[in-house]
View 1 (cartoon, rainbow, N blue to C red):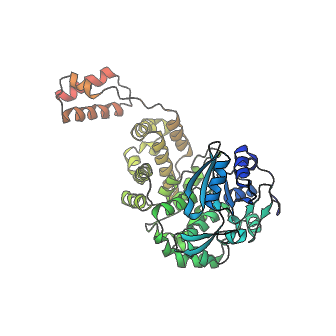
View 2: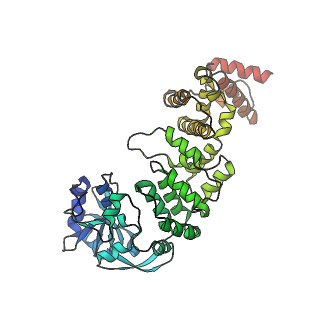
View 3: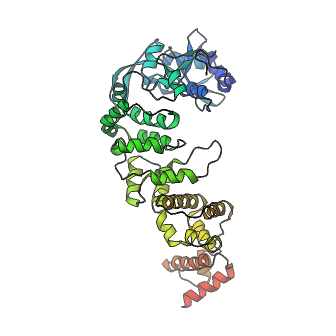
Length: 424
């Protein structure tokens, strides 16, 4: 990692990036890459979003982009942000800013042409780095040394930075989980603990995004333990939390190369398996309906496995039928989640379920084609069942019998069973 220059990167030399840079530099303005793209490039990590800064005001930026034939979307003009689109790729272009007034959630800004003043308003030193298109780096606050050392440090006074926007408190811990190589500064932890009640000022959406990103770190457990011990999470997750199940889950969860860990599954592992707690957390964090339903399912996962205890309590072959029943009821992805969490909870409780059984369950979820129940309501109507609740009730009873028979009965068998159940 050179302190003066960033070697050429694919994202820097991409034609779409070049088109945006050329448009912004057309009248002589200095343009730099800023934020995460610079940080990740220096760390040798993938770059997903390319952010650009310029001293030109937003109206001028829009004019320059449009003059070059590029699309300009005024995504946040009041705060100086325009999204440039080149070859269907978005680039966030932001005018240099200084904070005029801060409110703990957002700031009133003024535009400037002072690069160091703009860098000074950023949260962490490693995020205050900037880079010209030719690779020249600018480091006003020791961010390169911090990046090398894996030291997460605020720009300037930590208390002031957090009080400007309390989300920075959560970002500090997220970056500690992602990039920290040395323990967090105890003085900063004291400040974080003291200011944690300010997190209540933030929207559920902003808190959710930071927490889920933290949970996607390779191993967030050490940082989460600090956050719990320091009561940092109390304002946003007042439920009873524990890292034992999460630590066990991390050791067994399958991970495809380049794929981030599943944050909702990890959140479920952090919570006690209670439906009420899961619903409360989902509402407070403004989870999507799909995320809420998954979290609640995982909170209830123990109940599913108590019903089909053979998944773990019998041998692999004996448990196969129970495993298929669960797969039919939950679907492959939900079965994977429920089994992984059950395995992790058992490990955290001191049990040692056989790893082969876990492997069998996951393989079954991947390989088994879920059969289709061979009857429909119209089949029962053809047998003379009257329209109404009896159709659904009888259909459910036949289906339950078919599932208990390990899905083997044919359509004819199911019809005969329907007749027998109706007659009985």
